[in-house]
Image (cartoon, rainbow, N blue to C red; front, side, top):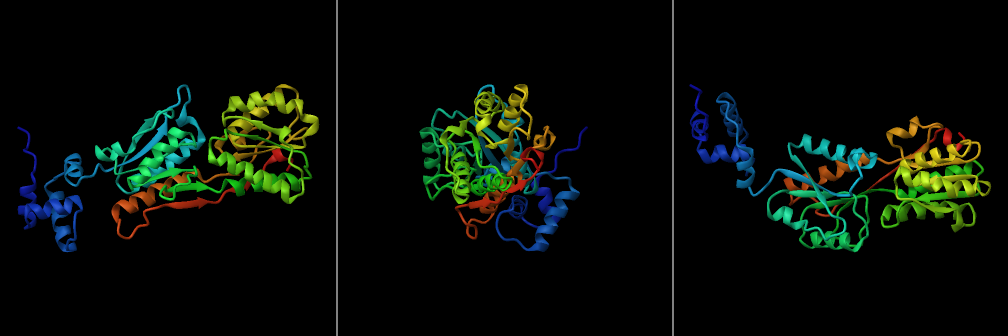
Length: 344
């Protein structure tokens, strides 16, 4: 016969406390003498008593989960992209260290997402929103969540609403540094392959690009600004236009490494020598950036640290609402990594 499962009453008897005290210690609820807490934990360990985590969380009105909400985009493998994988790794590191669970959820970007329902149904205690943009459906969903004053954070996207918590990178400064580096190499005609303007960080990249040109008294030329969507395919497609303008260009700044890798592939197929015919500076410093030929000069974005910081701040808020700032506003610095693609 198997041994009957230990119950809370037995733990209370061995520790010399009430069942209510055992419950409070194991659920981490309320103040407790350290000696009492240690006595209860020692008794639970000796009796091999494990608290039912699901029942415990619902008794406290908590799920024990930090939610991460991502956009569902058919045929796009989000987890294979450097941006999402690094952010999720940072979030996961913070969640693991705090003993929380991580719940991944997907939203339809074309519809208003009911974030608040995740809290009402106790699926999450807080959430981090990835990959959002300035579309009306996205704005409405985030603004509704902010009005509920629920603990959440948006990653790397600006919102005008002061109640929206944000952790982002300083993309304007990062782009400025990238273009300034090309100017320091003697480049005057600097093109720009940017991502979709529905993302605020695309506008930030454009602002940094323009600031560097203006500071160097280089006239902005809209004809050498090209449009991509942050995918490798869009970078390769842009190679047609960039190659057409090659005699007009000294260099090009590209909004992320994936587009830059596609662009380089497309240009090489047309016989372009890099960086002799065109200097390139990119953005992100993904794992592939140092493996291209030539290796990419790129702006390192601390995505892992951004994800970890957002999760840590939210979990700190859940643990101590009285002494934690309810609105998160963090901007992390980027770093230029110089390699051979810029002629260095």
